Image 1: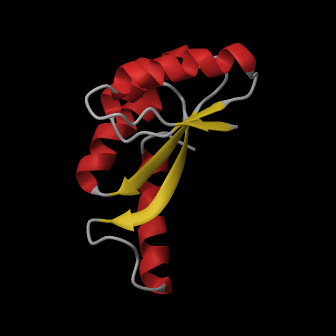
Image 2 (image 1 turned 90 degrees about the horizontal axis):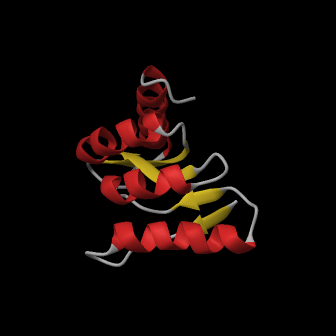
Length: 112
């Protein structure tokens, strides 16, 4: 899997679409679209020839609410980071609680 990131502010959608196209001209690997911008993902995911992955989703309410529909609609795999509204986990118990919330939310939305 190749990670592609078109993170140029104000041009991410255009750049991510371009990257997906240009990378797929030379590589027949699945792509991991590295973006938190739902509009850029919505534009680039349909261009992926193989099942894509989204890098990444967190347990931050606003971010997960925006990204889940895009991930689900395009049947993308997802990297889930153990980050919440309060930032990185404070310890093992916090990490496990965050991971459990993320897995629960993802699976309840139909994302394996």
